[in-house]
Image (cartoon, rainbow, N blue to C red):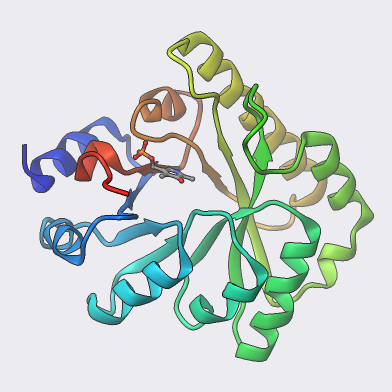
Length: 222
Ligand SMILES: *Cc1c(COP(=O)(O)O)cnc(C)c1O
């Protein structure tokens, strides 16, 4: 199957209003160009240098999403062009993005990453941490970041019931914080969940942004 055919297959699974982030990390620019030619405009990368290198050579209307774990010393390189940072996993990081975005004269769209999996290795806020960070209210002074929603990764398991339960809990938490902290913020509307093996389950649980890599581009070569 070609990249174009894979893309079409994934797109057909997505209802109106659910957007596809084509996760192109570790794949060469040729692969991204193939997806671009097939109409894909939103690409997700997990390393800042790699994303910057690709951004320089890809067409200007590509929307770049950063989906990886972000180190503060790398933020500045992507600020001129990044359109959404999915993985804000601490208040300190949000503050740092805000500070550097102010210097760059931009307002950066961000998602708060929640820890929903029953695994030890994933980054993210626990619901309690996220709730207390939002309740503290200081984030409202960060005028160079715009919190647009939440992101989460389910456990890496074949148990679809468990995956669905984790996505459902994230959606429930999204509704809760939307009502409590973002009732006046129409921009708080994104729920980034679902990857190659579980995006259908994520869509069924209310995902608005799926991040699909290997299902489109094939296995990654590290
Ligand atoms: C790599 C990655 C993806 C895509 O994973 P696939 O299984 O290849 O679809 C999605 N989200 C995040 C955060 C990733 O790091």
